[in-house]
Length: 398
Image (cartoon, rainbow, N blue to C red; front, side, top):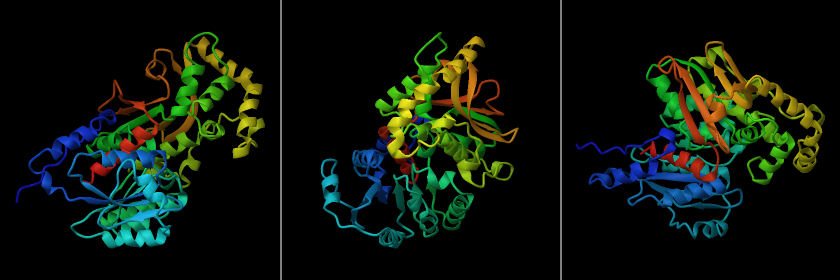
């Protein structure tokens, strides 16, 4: 029997996925691709962009979208929905609601030896993430940019891994750490090929990247910390409440996910409470720690100015040493340390010279990449690149 061709998926810097797939589709062997049943939950910015990216793939598509669901509406058809980029939103709004339990049973019923089913979760819901083990155990693949399941309680993560091993269904979560950047896949490749990871270090938060690229740029003076945060909020770089970014919890979640991706660290750095077990430096002034509710966002932002003198001193002290400030995540395998922290870096360090805007940059120090670390850099947030990361995971199932 002729072996069907496999699409050459280029993951470096998150580029080339669609082009590689479309090249494979032009092959005379394209008919070997059996459409994979795809159920998409969460149709906001990322989910909507993903739907349009899937619909833009060249025919014949390797996917048939069998379900779209929001918190209030669900479209479902086992044969595949008839969707267009201009009609699917209206179609979904006219659909009747369907309970998550019913949808889950319908997806499980589609699983067969000759047909793959994948559940794509574009929400940030813990309740949806809690369904992953039962879906995986029944043979439904799970792909998601939702960090909750992989950075939370170790019990849920362990159940996800066990269910995947039992059924052979895969869980893929590239977009949880670097959006479209190949962070998790790069780490998996390093480990799988026998390289030894010594240290992972990087600017994992696009928000923190923007803030410190502008606040601490290696020059005398500069804007105040509060004004940079205010501008970042106005541009939409922060969460609706900036405290959600300044707490460092997003970086801690990404560190928990990467730590759990390295099998040898499961015993030495177990992280039983996930990101809550990661030592994290918060940039929220203690006097403002009570202003973290959604309705306190404006007051919190306005009062940050009261603490600018403290931030200015940190910047000036770093500058005297020829350094800049960066909020980073560190996984030091040799020392058994994982932390999210504000640190100094020399003005000629890559974290000081290579970043622009809200870029992320992650360096892998390994046995093979010893003298010069392997660096992955680029946009680490945004609907288009996050959806691309999800689509890249989908194409790994083809």
